[in-house]
Amino acid sequence: MRRIVQLSPLLFVGGVVGLAFDHTLVSRAMINPSSLSDQYDFVIVGGGLAGLVLASRLSEDSSTTVLVLEAGGTGEEVADTINHPGRAYYAGLVNSDYDWKWTSVPQPNVKDRTMAWPGGRLLGGSSAINGCYLVRPSAVEVDAWHELVSGLDGADNWTSERFFAAMDKSETFTPPLQDIQTIGNIQYVASSHGSSGPLHASYPAYLPQVVNHWTGTLANVGIHASSDPSDGDASGAYVTTMTINPTNWTRSYSKSAYIDPFYRPNLHILTDSPVARIVFSGTKATSVEYGQDRHTVNVAKEVIVSAGPIGSPSTLMRSGVGPKDVLDAAGVSTVVELPGVGQHLQDHLASGVVFTTEAETAGSVNANTTNTYSTTPEFLSYVNPAIAYANTADLVGDAASFRDEVMARLDTSAAQVPSSDSSVIAGFKAVYTASAEKLLTTTSGQMELLLALNSPGAITVQAALQRPFSHGRLYINSSNPFDPPVIDPAYMANPADLTMLREGLKLARKI
Image (cartoon, helix red, strand yellow):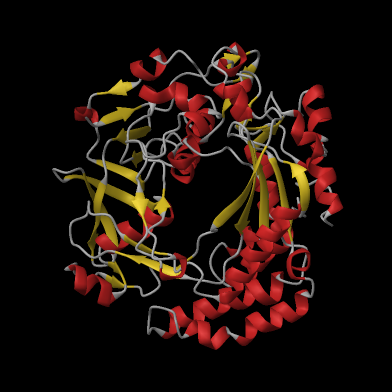
């Protein structure tokens, strides 16, 4: 059933904006679909992390009408699972009806395995089902991106200075509890965070004692403990902030931060309404078709495609915007030939090393059915917050020589791009070169190391590529708008990725 959600009144918990546990307010906000307007100024495709933020900001102008079309539900039926971050480990929504459950095509460089690509299929998108990590990038990474988009409209908003100012505006930072700070050796600088934004940034109310050894252990293998990981240098080891509301130890995400606190009659959110396609008059978007029975809503100003890294390019291609050869093969008429849609797909592939332990872990507490603490909001606020970012020198030693090896493969790698279009190949070379020349010899983290304590009797150190040189693509192979796209991340197509992940796992073994 499709539902329109208008926004519930502001709810205060302990004097601070909080997430309601009484969901009757949400139920009262439902409007009969017959109340949907024929036309809106803005129609946003996708009510996920970015889509709900955009909806909230645009609807601040009461004279502007906004509609969000979300394929999934509101999530209120599984609110308890969403609200408690720890449930993502023990009874999460991955592989449920609230997950898109995408899969890759078989990957020849990882023994022809198909790989799961989960994604939140509900209001809030993946911010409603993920691990709540709130890790800022390094300034050098943002500035490298800014150089790539230099000259485009709005490019000046992507300097590191403006990026971090926007992050500050979005968050309210709360320091850790004193005992949590002591256990985790947590270091922070409050002025590097925001203090009045809608999204909460804090730390769990529970940490296993083993976390106390994290930063010291990393220092023993040459990775420094960061005293301020949010000031523009994200390298080193630390306990990171999470999107947790410390007034009630619940998940803070795009719906709870940007939608639930406000009542705006000019904003409608229609759930259970997957978008079939955008309709064009010439090259101007004029309406959007949604739902299995193809309802249509008209657009006065803009359609904003905000359906994530899988949904956005898929929606564009289903609407006739993308590579002509792909559209022709799928039986979709070309509206705008845009060869880069679906190209340059990258994913941070991860693996891990598992050690057995008799020490207390979050997993062992959860597995102890006689321990009532495991059902408390404090315990269920725990997600694995101990992380580290290793740079190229930490992994391979001579960063400059490794960079030169990577750049020597530029033309060979470009020849593997699944497109003959010169602009797509040039785009690949630009991203590849920026990743190698601008970042490989800096402190920029190339490998994430994560201390995972959510299994009983086990400590896992995960290693995850942060900037793979292997690029794949996604595309549609059917004119049916509700068929899943073809996802091919081309894992390990570039030898540099295998080298980096191998060295990351070596480092995990040392830890």
